[in-house]
Amino acid sequence: QVQLVESGGGLVQAGGSLRLSCAASGSIFSISVMGWYRQAPGKQRELVANITEIGYIKYADSVEGRFTISRDNAKNTVYLQMDSLKPEDTGVYYCKAEVLNVPGSSWYDIWGQGTQVTVSS
Image (tube, rainbow, N blue to C red; front, top):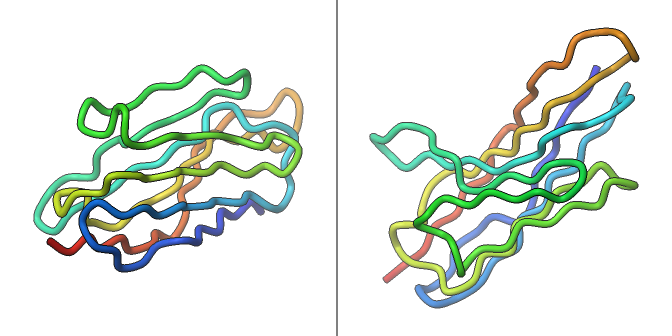
């Protein structure tokens, strides 16, 4: 079994910074895309940023220039550095990874449990 464990959420004032981490553990042969999603109250879950194994990155327009995603493949860990935070960044942040357990098997997605980020005005 593979699991993702997130950390780093919390309460911060507008303009502040937080750094999220997400570590994958378990039976892992390879991880393709790792990413962060968020869900605000009453809204659908949305992509914040993702990064491929070779470092190709995609950001949501709303966070471009403020957030930085990075990845340590040796540690199966993805990070999200969030700067210049705004109240509209508030939500539960979820980590997602596309995982391959055994060569020749199928890739599948796994989600973390989520970590709360609250930005006060």
